[in-house]
Image (tube, rainbow, N blue to C red; front, side, top):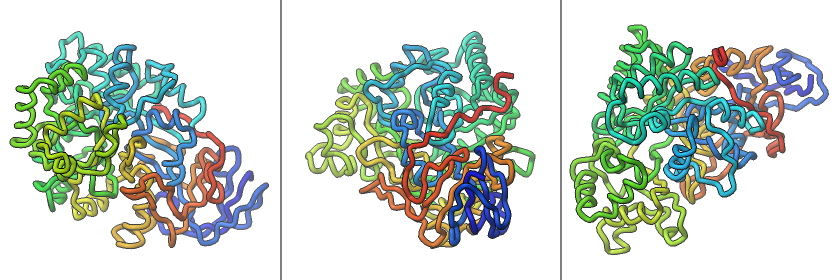
Length: 529
């Protein structure tokens, strides 16, 4: 054995009762589970829980996993695999023009690092780039908004048959190159311009290639249940498995309504649907500030959007829709500017806005909040991020109890004060919802964060502590594990996680980050078929 973790309490990822054992690692694999194992190095794991490495089913590390190889946000909380390409917007497959547009559009999510080498265009090339050396393993979903942008641009219309054929062809090629499925962002442009029939056609391709569909659906607010029902229908009509991204019920209109969502899903599952979901254990959400705009205001891309925001009459039309009726970008709910907190800007002159709600900054400036909002978007060229304080604790707890639930951080790693879920999601599950509140038992929670997620990704040798499986492991102290990241200090490593192993190589060793980059891309089992 290269390493033996001696006397650990093993929570194996199945949900079965934990048991005490030595776990040995050799050649990147779990080579032994038992008593009295010997090895080149023996680590005393008495008092620690040994579990499969956590799988972040909804991650926005697409650039930062490459630009900041240490990747402490994820490795420090025990994540050994994350799923990229989320919410229908990422950086492959692209051409030069689409990539240039996305770099600006997604700067609020992922930054646009100076001097960064954008040396890929296809999904396969992006996965090859990951394989040069990353801290954790990564899977990728084809982003439907990016796909639509590539094949028909920013127009709000159905595709022609030729355009649909091209989308299907590029999607199939991307799945053969290793993508695990398809994501969409149906409150983000241009993905939101797709109709149900278009999504069904794309999901047929995904299902044929053994993938799954992971939508950010059309509303988490006024039309949430109808939006969830649409996604269930897409899955049923296409025959494609469904994984609901950040499956929350937010905004005042949905307080206490998680049971209605779960009843909808249970009925579909009982009828034979293959459905899973992920959530983060926090109340606020996070996105880029321009996402609140109505879809018509962003048709044509960023330059067309900025032109509309510079026109007085168009601004008033947008304001009325956002504040009075509720835009589709704001989930059909009239915006409450007190709930929208700017948490990341790119220009120094706007730094004073960070950590304040739009309403608070507007009061200080003596201006209407919508006018301040518009001016910030123009000044920042849309590259601004925000927190949306719209969640409900009872909904969060009810949904995480569901047997189809997995964990996803939905964490943005950039900005002045990013959401702490990027650094704290997985220890927060163990500290707050296992140890403090007892919402989940320890073994059950570990299964949610590991084995269940691995099944959705069809990883037949990860997600469990089992001989022969890849040695993706986390060891934590069940009495002290905790998230220390806060909204004021969001970039804080977890407490109580002294060891994290990726492909048999320690990346956190006795509480310290090693210099290892043992992660790699995890590809569709049918890739290159």
